[in-house]
Amino acid sequence: MTVKRATTQRAPKRREPVREPRTFAAVNRRVHTMMDERPTLDYTVVRTVVLVLAGLGVVMVLSSSMATSFAASSSVWAQAVKQMAMVGAGLIAFWAALQLPPEKVKRASTILMVIAVVLLLAVLIPGIGTGKEEVGSQSWIAVGPLSFQPSELARVTIAVWGAKVLSSHETGVPFLRRQGLILYCAVAALCLGLIAMQGDLGMAVTFGVIAGLTLFFIGLPWPAIGALVALVLVALVTVFLSGGYRSNRFHVYFDALFGTFEDTRDIAFQSHQGFLSLGDGSLFGVGLGQSRAKWFYLPEARNDFIFAVIGEELGLWGGVLVVILFALLGYFGLRAAVRAQDQFQTLMAASLAAGIVSQAFVNIGYVVGIFPVTGIQLPMVSAGGTSAIITLGSMGLLASVARHEPGAISAMQNYGRPAFDRILGIREPKAPAQAAQRAGAKRSRSRDDQLRERFGTPITARASQRDGAPASRRSPVPPTSAAVAQTRRPAQLDRPSRYAPLESRRGTPEAGRSPRRPAPVRHDARRAG
Image (cartoon, rainbow, N blue to C red; front, side, top):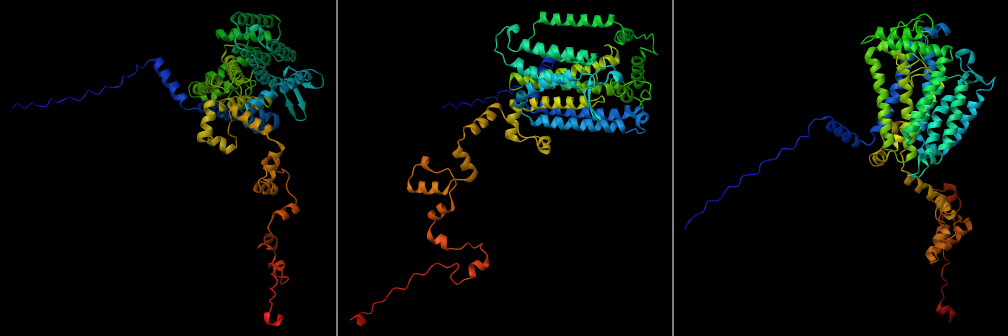
């Protein structure tokens, strides 16, 4: 008998996972996967960046306005307190915009657009519009001690209303035949002309950029884009050849572009001082509050050229920080637009995000010398009243779109709202189907259901149901006391409540007692006999 030796099987070798090469595409794909796993990331980043920029603006306005504020009101805190009040009002507008569902904003956009056009017309009326003597443009409406700039409202409204008008079209329709395109272009051209008539070239440029970006996001053809760019270049050449202080700004721009200023005491004074401020800041800055340019060297240090003060006091890293914050706002704002629920929210979020970032890009550009000086403020950082309130309110609309992404709605409904929303009492977002279902349920409820929800099921209906009456014949009206008395048992009527006063239960011997039955009559058979 032969014995065979058992063959030993070797365990299979463990395969090591194939490591993905560390290329830019692989890293980019991994980063996007990590971001997709966090559905509320867009809302968190947009909200955080807006709050950081608003806080940085208050600090820098306090630092850059000390000298001018003391000269105007004998207090270094006057301008800073005013800016804090305006930012506080803007944060309230930011909170209110977060509370509004995008559907309500869409319904109210037409009314806001009409109000904006009426205010743009009113500001041109002599006696109503102000600012011509102070700043050279009749752009404000004074109401007591406060002033309002209608062009700021128009700048945001054209993005919201344009998203409503241009989003209601069918797919596959040629661009020039899209519904609402002619109406949008006509209203945008009207508002642009009214702003230009005020003399505010910087705001006209900002408004035109937002209107153009809105058209670009709906698929403006490249030939039309080229025509618009050519039209803008013709307008700039016309301004350059027209003379005046606007023409001087172009001369200063060419000087700054090549680093040679010819007249540093007249037309190039502001741009030259801005360059000196950035140069003094170097890498780490001279320290917060230690700027020398704000001591009447740099005009409009708290408004148009506040980025120069940031570069002087905080250095290169402070300027790079501001640029990174606006880049994050633009990236996550556009990402929220791509992930939005419908085309209206996509177009509104993209227009608002791109408009704010382009405004910041132009402001930083003319401070460092790559654009002509236009007077456009740095959003949420420069000193301003109407600008701070309306800009923060528009950022609330952008954060609301990010908050109503399908993934964010599902995450909040399943895992709860963020701590920021719970603390500020911001309601849980609803999907459009949920909101429509809730509204339809409210409209479809009959009067019987409303009365039953308010008063409860009538007792007569309960009695009818107990007697076998059909449910459709139940009375929806609350029963009277007589009907209640008929449906109760006699013992319940005679039994007093234990919460009744003591006197009512013990005042009479019979109170609170059931009626005794009469004693039975006994018949004596013997007596009867």
